[in-house]
Length: 250
Image (cartoon, rainbow, N blue to C red; front, side, top):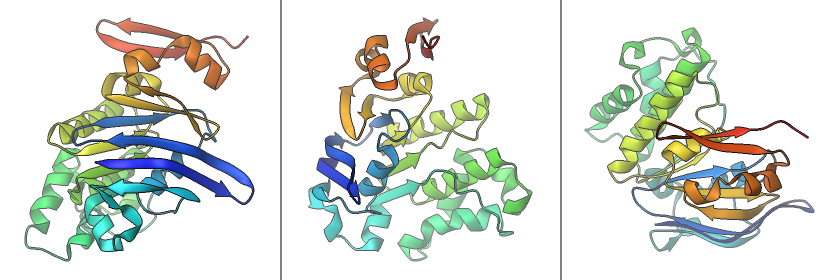
């Protein structure tokens, strides 16, 4: 269990997060959604142990996260930051291999790297230089690096942002499969239809506070979304696939 307990975060006098609490269990895909500036990335960095809250705490399997060493945290929590496109001429395989650093070069590293490359469909790119890849290919490489950690918790900040629709679906299917195998996935998304389709639970942030928390079918209500985003929304289905679309601004 990865649990945020009464998390408060500040930047100077600005309040970024105000008593945020929720938990992620094995097999969960939890989507963090909300408008820009709501505190989503700040929350994810605190959950990953990359930033400390002003108050409150993060519990990882019953242990306060801040008491663990950096290596212990890195073995348990894989973190995929927003953006992060690489300008280095190192190869895709070398980038993905960085995900194995917390494990200290154990014998099954090559197998884990190959599994990660295959999971995101870039085996054919393994020997290509990062500088030769498109933005979408680089994004998938960085996801493979996070998958190579084979951590029980995977945190990703807008990993679909630079991908075309096909590769957005491929990426979310990859995360769904990883969650089905027992990984707890926490992901920031702006595409509410993707969130509705793939996330078991959603955390809706607004001005640093949780406006709502629950399954997509109860949380993605047009009236609630309009109160948070300030524009109307339309909730529908295309076949069995949920769709949440912004309406016309008044």
